[in-house]
Image 1 (spheres, helix red, strand yellow):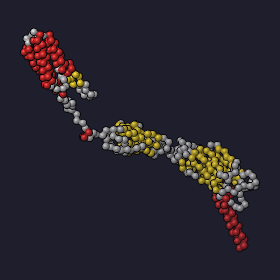
Image 2 (cartoon, rainbow, N blue to C red):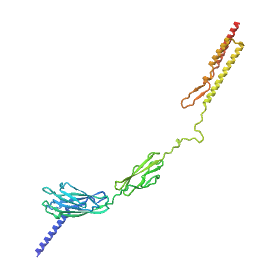
Image 3 (cartoon, rainbow, N blue to C red):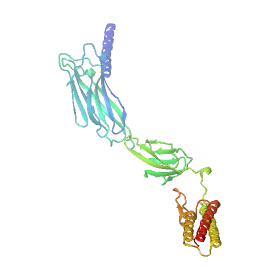
Length: 395
């Protein structure tokens, strides 16, 4: 009795141990995991199949298996599969009907390789209109067989992989508020208005902006420093949406006022009714007056000479002879030649460029010296006396 009980216990432990080892092997040989468990619409989700050959028995080598993936096509679209180098070319073939992907692995040649680590990758995309939330990918691996086509069901597995669809990225690339550090925008800020004018004083050399973008978006300001006083500076604010695709720009024309003129450089303007040109002394009137005085002196000297000549004639004779008349005429012409004439004295002096022309009346030199006039009188008197003596001798 005791022997039978002991034998039954040994058989039970063997059976339980065998099934436990088979269950552990089926759970640990093939494994599927999501490389990226969450994605935005337009992004991809990758599912990876791995094999742990250390959990195979020494006599078992997987030479073939079937793999079936099921998914919700309203949230995921199958794209492709990617194989590693340890999967022989053409050893894995698959088919997709839009809701299910069925693939078969079958070795070719004289033996099957012992698979280790990553073997296959399944690539899914998230549609742009996919609703946010969670979804699942069902994985079924069955019909595992060795090289002799013997089924090894203990290595079959079933898994459910959960993934998340994130809310779609915002495409809003606008500002919600724009406030300058000084001055006011014209027109007033509105997200739909893209160009503004900002006037600042001449002492303002830089302007900062509080630019608030839409949720998830980012804003970049092109510059803060301004050009010199009196010039206009263009500042551009670029807004990039959360999806990194949509963009918009805002332009601010910052007009910096002219710098004020310093008091030392400010020219004094003439008062109304006054002239900014100072009156100049009329040098021409002085020159004309001087020339008139000189002409009067010359005329006085000429008159004195004629008076002296007439007196000499009366003293010599009351009836002048032809010779006396001829000599008097010559002396008179000589005196007229030496005396200045109005035609010679009225000379237009041409002034250099930028100056006034002075019209000078009379000569520009002093009157004829008295000694010349006296000499002329003496010579005429001598001629008159000589003529008188000649007339007396003829009589």
